[in-house]
Length: 178
Image (cartoon, rainbow, N blue to C red; front, side):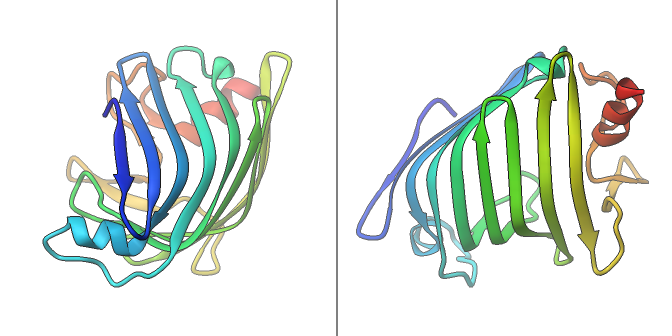
């Protein structure tokens, strides 16, 4: 999506989404209300919050250390339509990044109903990432399992042939760090 602009009585936001074989990116600037999202959908979700900030992220899928994020993004009670038909509910989200460091504070996401609480940071230190994060799903610190081609897989599972490697993105990063 080269440019997605939403401007009405409740929102004034501009977003971009880019997915290529070697790179993924997104930008967001402004404020987007759940009411505006609801007016664009046939079956509007039951949400009333706002997503606001100025944030940009680029993920280098071939060389993840070159990935970068800047800005701030905050919000609560916003439902985003999912590509697979399963919406992503942002109970709370708080991201802040300066290019070399990404902080996630008291963020609660729901994908398919179960809440996942995330907090921590990822910092680029020379040629590696320093990850200090807590991921909590219903009281158990774990990554969520989803159905991937008929098998149970981590929610961060990369498909076969994915440029950054097949398997869980966090486990691949941890193995690369060792």
